Length: 146
Ligand SMILES: CCCCCCCCCC(=O)SCCNC(=O)CCNC(=O)[C@H](O)C(C)(C)COP(=O)(O)OP(=O)(O)OC[C@H]1O[C@@H](n2cnc3c(N)ncnc32)[C@H](O)[C@@H]1OP(=O)(O)O
Image (cartoon, rainbow, N blue to C red; front, side, top):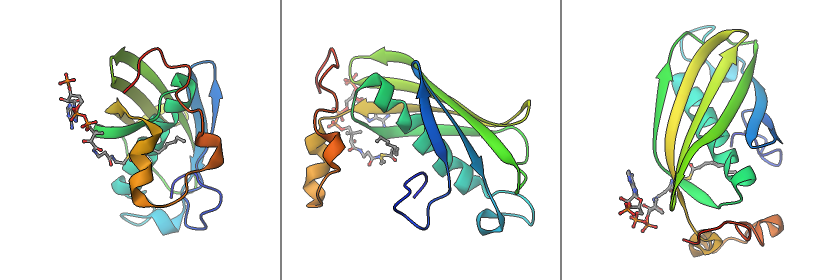
């Protein structure tokens, strides 16, 4: 619902990995409004969760959000391309401490921190839905196993 291009309700986030960081952009519009002209905080929180979760790819560890804090530092205006950046601050066994920012130019609009927990890909098999084929082998290079 955030970056998935197969989902017509996605928030339009695009991301890519550079070294061990995730960088991206998002352009919110009136569909994502809270107060008129401003992004809804829940949309920013969803973007943050997804952004921090994308760090699981360069980490090569499947994982899920256990807890997340989003600090809203400045109003996020609709119709502006905002920059996204996220990274892993610390790995402590299965605990993955992520950090990230949503910026409008030089202004940090929101910052986030989250604890992700490294899980085996089989964590998602309980839904009964098929997993994306490219998830096969995800976590193979991780130096610890859940
Ligand atoms: C392609 C990749 C792109 C992905 C982008 C998408 C990003 C979106 C990410 C999400 O939104 S994921 C969906 C929302 N999250 C969930 O559905 C998670 C639901 N929770 C669970 O499934 C389990 O609670 C969880 C896997 C997190 C942990 O259960 P486990 O049984 O595997 O572990 P356990 O409870 O033993 O906890 C392991 C350690 O983590 C710690 N822990 C777990 N939950 C915690 C918590 N909430 N706060 C603090 N610590 C926590 C726990 O204390 C323990 O610490 P110690 O090893 O030191 O004892």
